[in-house]
Length: 119
Image 1 (cartoon, rainbow, N blue to C red):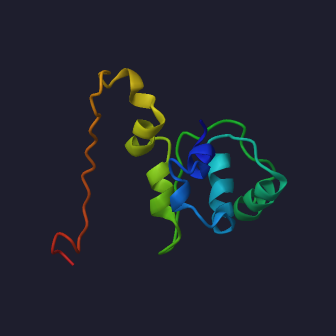
Image 2 (cartoon, rainbow, N blue to C red):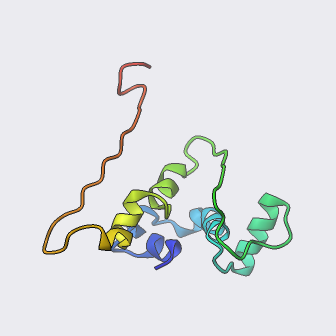
């Protein structure tokens, strides 16, 4: 399953990306980041935002983004392939977690300055 299939799947992340039209630029980004084939519209978006002529054909080792407030970065980070949530749901840890009904447990230490009383 690709990351875009996970984003579109109604049993996985689909409910969090209901308005597909507003997520088109992010889908182009994810396709380029993971070396997935891009549609003509995605290639045009890629070219517009990167200034490059052709998208990559292999997965990038990392990405650095500048995204404004309410730009969708939290949702995209939540489904990113290197994110433990995505790995757990898609099954990358299938061979690590003991079978027979055991549940895997993931910890996500977060620093929220306002929640911690620092803001």
